[in-house]
Image (cartoon, rainbow, N blue to C red; front, side, top):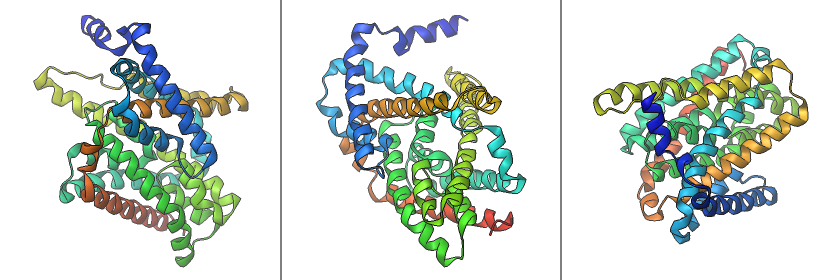
Length: 338
């Protein structure tokens, strides 16, 4: 109990309201601009816009904004992950069928492990390899942000991971329908492959759209089923860090509380007790919280350090995209979805 109290005393929650206010105001302005950019250019994710904007203006923000931006990065991020659970019900997952769910699990696990291995071969930092593996195999920027909350990853690696997700996910919007047509994938089959292999939810919708409404519907459910695996992946990494922390005295929680909240929100969504307008409001609030958190994260990054990842980061992103796409295609073929 004493350790918990001590931890609480050192977290941003102990910062007075006056100290966090300037940073929260900066995060609010950055979030509003990111959302406006997303409305003007729907192909540009609000989360990506927020982190890029934070990187660009972070060096110019006064020191008084740092406590509030730090608070937003840590607390709003975790609240956003909790609310993310409202986007998927277990009935949606069950409706896919056992073989498709198995294909999702195989794609995430093989994509994650394979990208970590590729990161070693390419020679990027372990932190960047973890961020790319998480974002590309699960659910883009939100997964990267969630994984960062249980690791001590350099902020430049987190920002680079988000940037790579945007770059290669945007490319997949054009490539998936093009390659799918060459491979003879039509309708739900193309939608399933898009859901298995494309990084962000919005990118999945755009990639599946040429195949029609039925393709988009199944693509979104497949993609959100990948999102469910965010909880065990983050918890697993947290457990590894907990074991390693024995030697250093650092003992993170066995399962992070926000992961428990994420699973609880899936259960609430599955119960059917929440009306549609509440679920819609929850989705909007999730985006706002993630955007504010990622703006705060981006503001702590310095461009010089970010650019040093250079060609190796780009190569890892390309290899991971190909890996996840091929694994997804193979899993789809084995499951009989082709």
